[in-house]
Image (cartoon, rainbow, N blue to C red; front, side):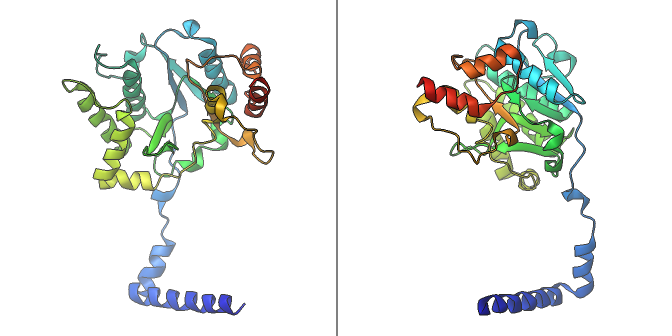
Length: 285
């Protein structure tokens, strides 16, 4: 353990040098300060979702997704907006025929978080763990998003959380409106996510908020989508993976619904068991 003894001596010397350079009083003062800015911020207890038509006209995967957020979060207000009700809650630029309808949903999600705060989830995400069991400690910066696992993308927008008037969200929405409203073509389908990256690269305050945001991997939440849409990449879920600890699961609205386990969950309004879905997909391959 000679090397460890040497390491301890180095730690002692480094501490003494640091305290001498900073000043003993200032050093202890900095260490003892409360640092409220690093502590979780209160989040409005509302979940926002959007489907352009009334919920009773939505496909079963959307209705089941909404039901999962309501069942798992009984003390939260789950608010599902449609095109007819958006204006009651938030103001966004009108839809243009040369713009994809998905981009309007992007404007709606960021505007809601800017003005009202809370949690945004896509209408095709399924709640696995109640929000109170995992989200509050992650709200240190007043903002939360999952980093995107796809190469070259900073974050995903299927799940977002923010306190009202968060600086990063405000800046994001303002530039979204400017870019969406400009004449001519928008140059990338994923421009909303790339605009977020542009902001944190060019605005120090926005970058500080993202740096202070705890990061959770997004591979778990997209596992169900991969299983149902990419059968050529199927493999068993290892026994040591705790699928119940994955907070939510994503699917696409145009996914072919042929997996028996998934269909049974839809029909019975049961919880999604992604391990059983994977096992069924492997059997049917």
